[in-house]
View 1 (tube, rainbow over the protein chains, first blue to last red):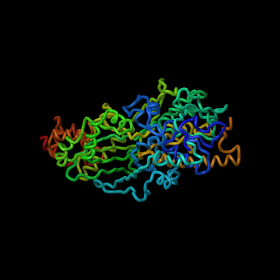
View 2 (view 1 turned 90 degrees about the vertical axis):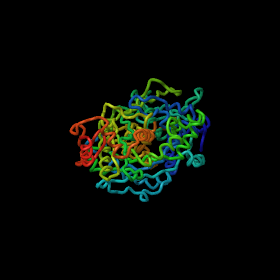
View 3 (view 1 turned 120 degrees about the horizontal axis):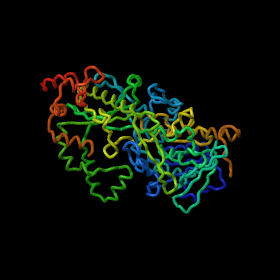
View 4 (view 1 turned 30 degrees about the vertical axis):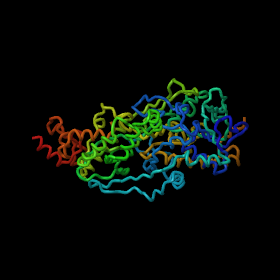
Amino acid sequence: MLYSGLSEAPLSERVFDVCIAGGGPAGITLARRLASQGMDVLLMEGGGLELTVDSQDLYDGKNIGLDYYEPYTARLRYLGGSSNHWGGRCRELDAMDFHSRPYHPLSGWPIEKAELDAYAEEADAILEIGPRSAVPDTTVKLGGETVERLTYRHSPVKFLDKYLDELKAAPNIHVVINANLVDLELNEGLKSVRHAVFRSHDPGEREYRISAQAFCLCMGGLENPRFMLNANRQVPAGIGNENDLVGRYFMEHPHFVIGDILFEDTVPETENYSMPMDFQDDREMLNFSVRVVTEKLHLLREVSRTALCATSFGERLARAVLGRNIDCDVGGTDEYFDARAFLADNPVGHVQVNTEQFLNPDSRVTLLDETDALGMRRIAVDWQLADEDFHTMRVAGEWIGQRVAAEGLGRVRLRDWLLNRDIAPPGADEEMPGGHHHMCTTRMSDDPKQGVVDRNCQVHGVENLFIGGSSVFATAGHANPTYSIVQLALRLGDHLGEALQQQSMNVGRGLSPAGRT
Amino acid sequence: MHIYMRKVDYIMKTRRGFFRLLLSGLLASRFAPAAWASPVPEKGFHMVNGWILTDSDVEVLSRYES
């Protein structure tokens, strides 16, 4: 069932099994999984069914670290979340990502990859991608060395388009849009959530206090920590933040172009390469892939760009806000025809890296003093790269440069900023510094001093509060995160379903009931 | 400027073939081989002005430089 506002939904005098805040891939997947087990699920989405200024403005904030994407453009705040504009690239985390590595302190997950692999078939179906076995990674010889050639699957799924009708028809999923989570009320011992407090965008409308057996935050890798830090009425440091970990270890997948290639004769197809764990261990590298990209001119793209650049400012702004940036200073059909003939004789390309990021507590999400329309302090994103990140990108660049030269494909020149740390890496206005992937800000660890949630995604110290999404990643590998987000949401759904069923049979075990109020 | 257009722009301005283009970058400033050739970890490769080159590349460049 779908309700367009809090006042329309049957929320009073009711205790839901699970209340989920956030209707993106994690929240929708979790809601469907719980509903399939007979749970009574409340799915609260802060935005509506399309992009609105009022909703999107709540994502505004500042970058106070490296030059990064504006917080309000890096994600979408309406039902379906950022899947409404994602690229659809899917890849599972590697087994090595779950292992602890001595040169990467705190690395390793408390669970094994196999625990997520168990959900691969269902994740494939949700994302409408074929089985991994149909497109396996392969090994190839490149410059005399055996290297891994990586493959990706591509999902066409926008969660809003795919699941809206199903959610409307589901008898035990109550979807409320324009419902913004503004607080959690803990019980007297501060060990469980009693109510979640929601508000609409209408400043005159009252607050709604929701009762549920369990509460799940599925608002994204930036918004989950932002909310928890804001929820400081009973716990001054913020809920779940007793050890000052909420918002720390914010990481991206650095996507920098680290080098340029001059090809000799044969221009290869664009490929993604990597090396196995022992290679990385020997060099104390973080997990990585490099993409050898052949620069090709696309007539259709340039015709499209020319047409778009002739449209109104409003149309271009809408596309920009939706993440489809268009640069009208370059390209276009004129430059295409000028450049095409010359490129045919002088083929060029570039090397783009895609790496795991080092677990750096100083790379973090914090709060500004400025508040949004709901009275919540806005986000400050302090994205930082560590020496280990530069080391990984440099070694990856040297390695692929050697392979390309040894293979006789051409020669690679590494970018100046990679060779000279006095030069800042390019910012978001120049290139893609990251993949719009926000991870590890409420990371998973069995040790409360090393992570915000435990292996079951439960917030340490709060019995019935759980987190879904990439903020719980313990480390992030180099794989695009949505596939793992879906796997984790399915796993969390099974854990919660089992725990709630056990609780109903044996009160006192499992979760603590919030109770009716 | 978009990355590929930037490189196209560079190539358009230099209008040279592969090796001459490589040389134009390497020889942008005058330097002694001992100073500009630094090894990268794998034997048989060198880094010169950021370019990752083979032994034979460096040998050719040395002749060019002299």
